[in-house]
Length: 169
Image 1 (tube, rainbow, N blue to C red):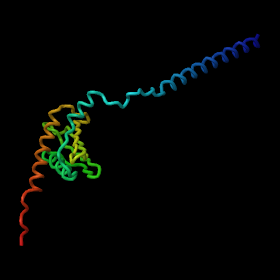
Image 2 (cartoon, rainbow, N blue to C red):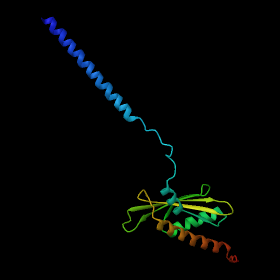
Image 3 (spheres, one colour):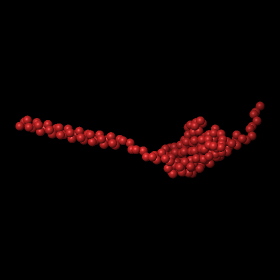
Image 4 (cartoon, rainbow, N blue to C red):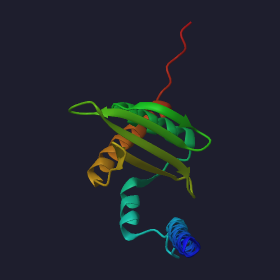
């Protein structure tokens, strides 16, 4: 009788092992299936209408031939608006700046401006602003920046084309 008990217990242990192996295999299959990345869609990087609307607010074209003059105007405009210039890369036409935002001065407003030559002596300038790492989509913000930039470019143009002072002797 002892022999028959051993046979039954050995069979139930084997059955328990098979069940445990099946559960582990199912769990691994589900885990691996859950880790697979979804297939990208065809329009993954296609611009949306909202993106194009924001881009049109962020971009202006100016009648400026000299890229350096445009870069100086951008830097001056940002400084006039209270920004601290973080980086200015003339070969890439890129200016990044930041400032603390009013009224509490712990929020950060960042701006990246690109300056790109266009055809026929024109220059395209695009400003991209973020507030606490969130994109700004308010058109008034960009209108204010471009109004300040136009004044800055006008002042720079007047200073460079105006009468030059005589050197002191």
